[in-house]
Image (cartoon, rainbow, N blue to C red):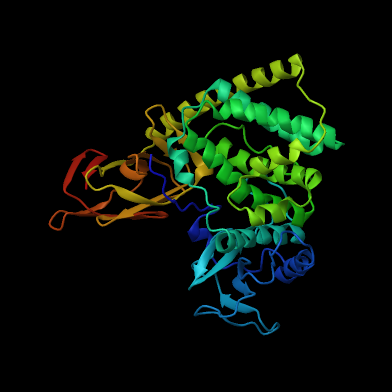
Length: 448
């Protein structure tokens, strides 16, 4: 399987909604940036200076640019603050918490919200400042450690979920949780050893690329999550129970949490670990953890038989509920009223542009159900599906070979003379040159 880089962006609201001009900002951005200045006084990571990394923030009214030497076209000097620039409205490249290039400069971006759409947690100005720092650390990673990248595309091929895999994932997480909360170093090390034992057993069940993906994820998203939680000053377990743990989304979530927790464990066992990683940036976090534990006394920690039994029963219950819910969700989607389009691109596969790895399900036929967003492009055209599900199929090079979209209120426009298909409906758009097209009632089959 050839691994390629896939761009994934978290989309928390429709672009159309995001571009509506609000009456007033979500919060006082200047208060957020005062909290950010306070965080800047903390030594979060060697060489990481949050006031040296540009950040663009959309406050629901305007987009503000901080710490930038040269603003892009459209930004002007803010009246009240030298060195701060403002763009009237939402700048096109700022539509989520992410990183983008402004010209040749990597820039962190943030769209402020008063709460988390995944956990419903209410955010304070300090929380919002911490989220900005999270994205700035991604810029630091890209510029200082360019090899620290995970390929989320591998989740599109994740092995079939099983009750045993879910159980091992959950008990591994519980052991790491107990390690990070343990009162003394012996117990910390004992629970960490138990967690790594379960982790090895679980990863031995999947092909090596999937285990490597998790290690990459811990080092990228896990460390950024750690930096954010330290900056915000929140509990180590903050926002760590938001999902049922089902793969593939549960695997990605686990990478955030375990990366955060391993970093916190290392803070206690080996305080100089960050400098060591800076000097040996090809290492993974669990490799540094294993080395640190060799020099640490420990008291072996184990789960009781009743705890193991309960974790297994809970995992089996969650698995069965998920299977039923997934089947109902897919069946309901396929029976939506309206037009259905099947696009086959086997002879001209499309390249993935965007998908949300936390909002996908792997189906029995290895197709992928996307709840939120998917986009792909090639020389024949583009497909973008936002805030509407779709079902995709891929070849082993992560290229799209078929996509099915159900429940479209409008039929696409077909120019038979030019053999061109066009659809624009809310957040769904496609423009494709096709070779064959068949229509039967509300169903349309297209070959490109």
